[in-house]
Length: 77
Image (cartoon, helix red, strand yellow):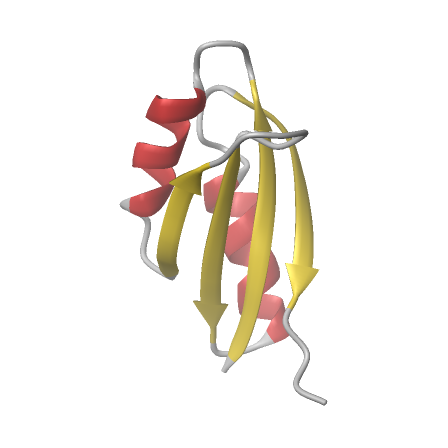
């Protein structure tokens, strides 16, 4: 299982609707509104790195109102 945090910037006033839409996607374990340089942080899980990439590109980045994402893959040291 591969896990990552997705840091998301949204258009002004779109944070709540983006977070709600992302939270409903399969593979998203949690999504929350935050303050600071990002508007939403989501934790996602997938079977492989390829599946993780597909989730980010094909589903998360397609949510209306998102302007930028940053993917931070979880590592277990």
